[in-house]
Length: 482
Image (cartoon, rainbow, N blue to C red; front, side):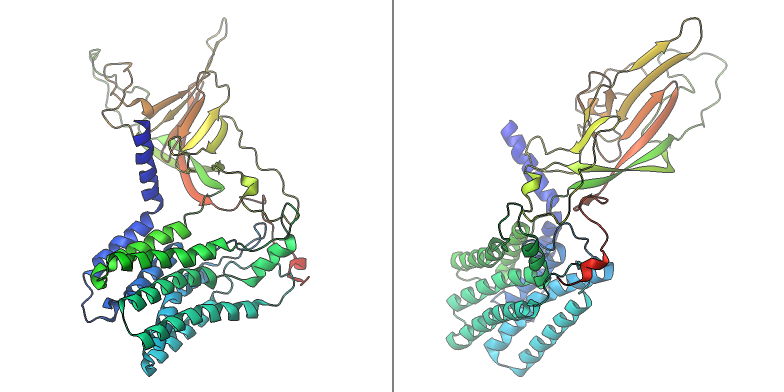
């Protein structure tokens, strides 16, 4: 049963992490039914429709193939430059598609469309030049040659496949070869558009942690070129009559390879918030003259309902690390530019808080926070000869547990208490080894009759270490060429 539970959990997590690409494929599936046969998108070689799917994947997941700038440098990420950068990624496949069409037809109209798209791409790249920019520029020069070489490679493949179809005709074999090669170039172009030669020079100048010379990785570009090309070639071989009727299969291929080449990155931490909350009440009915029977709850009883709370304006920031099934120090082999301070200690009054890997799939997750408890003893003290007393309790209330109404339940203390799932209440005492927190959970602390409640909010993931852990503000010397 644990094997099937692991498969179910893996599929559920995979669907949750790729919900954007799944929605994109369903949108393309519905849009295909609305495209008339005479529309240019409904071509039998599927190139325009593959470009549409590639643009959607680029908007959602497109990023560099391989590492970017040095991980210890601060990146500039203006919001407007980010949107323009996304637009340049989306238009890159269309420049390749229009270049291929001109080489295939040699018509002046296709030349004009290809030229206009190339100019639009150049303008977008110029306007988004500030995106992901860093200050350090070691040994300037060589960037123009890199851009020229990449443009000639991508443009040569696009023009070469177009000339192949121009001279050999639109046979099934030529269409399969050209479509497969262009799909691979789509992925490579999207992964190269936002690259900078300066990023490689930064890493080469810094070197590796083991003392060897840094070499740019070749495998990501190789996988992006060969994987989709071979996949589309196999699709043409399996479906000899492949045309626009099977465009959904080509779009699914693009979406799947988009998830493989650009998976969602694993954050290093998650920014969480603890909101101080107060119970909402004070409108109890007037007590009746006669006493109530024992099967009815008393009026004005002290109880805390996590569904009836009101946030105050007091909140506490909390960065919680994400554990992954990897060795963190070996993720990026580049040597640090300056001594790295030790990470912040995650140990606090409750214990050690981290986002541990999923217990079934062992894959990283950042939805459920696990707290490894230290000694949490309930304190009960009564002074002799006085009325003073001291009590302390800590409880986690979960308004919406996932066990359902048919799950395991707790024993009721009183008849009027409703039955709640066992997961809805976590009592933190000296026997508790670990506790879990999700968004919406309420941490209730009670000391000497005074209760403090904090609502947990799991916020946005952080992909660079928060604070000054791995980054520092740019200095004047960083702008000097070395």
